[in-house]
Image 1 (cartoon, rainbow, N blue to C red):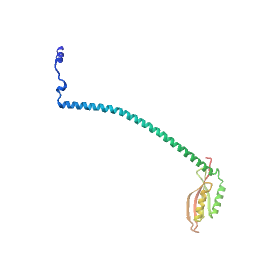
Image 2: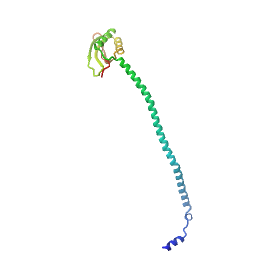
Image 3: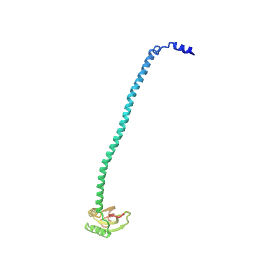
Image 4: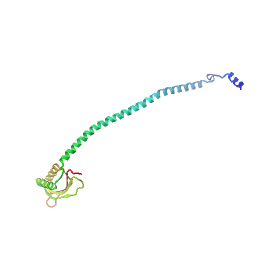
Length: 191
């Protein structure tokens, strides 16, 4: 065994540059250049990647901060809108009566109709599904202008009145206009 080891140590092994051809040298140079460039790029890219992650996290934090400020700004307007709507609701509630005396309401409607030369042919109370609302089915006779003025006056005067299902047609007998309507009068209720 000593003999083999001794022989190997005495044997002359040529260095790689001695057995390399010119093409091999160029290939090795290219390989070393690529490895060097890879190392340089890796050395530059890693810190840039860390910087990118840092900038992305900062950007997310800034976006969250911007959202907080926008929410605060929106809340300021929302509170002002809520206060405005509450004051409007209170003013509307003040315009609505607490209770309605149906006899007084009917008498008031007949008086208004007389003021405009409108004849109330029929007026009957209907059941209402909503609390705070009285519904009548009514039929009026009169001229076009008188009916329009009467309806406008009804909706502008207290208590809060709205007309639904209005139907206007001409009478066959005397060519007078007939209006049929459901009259809704609203008031405050306990419910």
